[in-house]
Image (cartoon, rainbow, N blue to C red; front, side, top):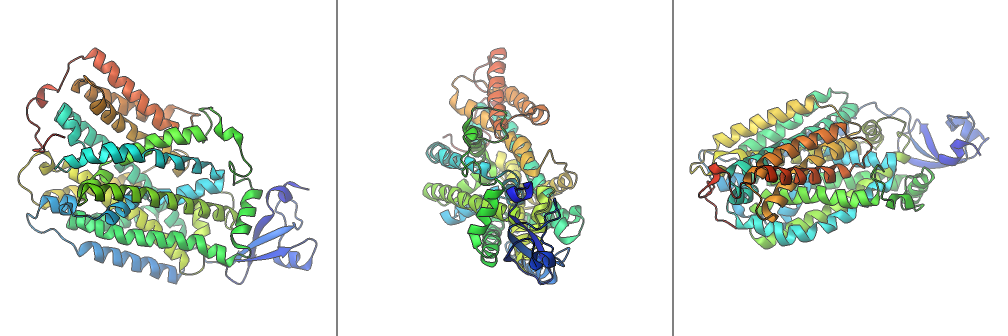
Length: 547
């Protein structure tokens, strides 16, 4: 049996009539000859079944797909612009929607905030290329629920301000708070730039338009309604974005399973033959080895994933702002758990899409983003546009949430100013939207998008998590140690992402966390001043009560 028989019993067959379907073939036969079902390695027909799609499919989105995307854009813009903060307005309304959100709105908004196009195309591409090893990270979601539920959310809810980093200010002064805020803005805006970049790559392949034009258009729409409507506009559009994203992912998962003869069984057999069901089938004991250089294993996913998720759900202002916007502590906690459960379900669906991408006839060798785009174009008319809209929804929900949260920690009223005017946060929103768009248009990717997200961007949340751990749990740590140790930790994290090679992807977050904690400790030994920085003495400038 040749190599093609061994690894690819499910091969590509293109027919003039459109649509997904399955047909058996056995060489030598007239059917195999007529359909061109031959091994690209041997030139002979192969035994198996074939996923059939149209050879003459459009190179780009078809008119119905474009109409679906246009309808999505129009509905999003209309919904976002329907809410507008006028004149002086109210700071609670702009930043926290008057602290009135119910738990469903909190949970779904958190979920669409932390998911973007980089997750949809990157996660599916990771599964299509490397198999199901990435699912080993799922238990980490469960592990971080107790600390966030018991400690983080009540501590943040005690504050009556707008910034998660007021906790650090109460203990160690405004300089440490400013450092944490700047770290958050750089961390999440870098992640947002990568998400926009990933969306631009995939959508460019699907539309034929320049990636930069797509990035600018998407960011401009989200920035516009965020600047005008504040938190209420963000939450209202987030609910719509979630519906579009859920519908797009569900349709992309279900439609191929319905149209392919044998459905899920056929897809799983194809994935198994290519080794994409590892480490679960066949079971791979090497995945549980303690080797830190293994690209992705059980221990690195569990430990590193817990660090990444704890930073995301416990220190990320764009998430904490949802806790603060909830109507009660119970709403904040329930919303958090809902977001975790929906995230778990979404990841499982994206894993299924990844297996379908690998089995689809469009899955020719190439970058994961290109394979994902070609797969999307092979979907029936209208469904390709729906998947594209889901990617846009995931991206735009991240744009509005992250930019709005960044503005909330940078505006004067969050630092104690008594007067609020909508013009100030509105201008900051436009400025941050412009800066992030420029960064996305010039973004280079370190490896695949999935690798870049875990190696560089996600791991950069570790220094911020280290500030909270050291600042709130270490007795006697000085403001000087947090400030300069935190700065050194941020530089250390940036350096490891660039120069540290042959490390498990999720261990970058662990290395950065431990490295920052060590630098804070060493700085405390060199600068043993106990208490706040000199400029922090006295009452906090935020006007909030101490937790």
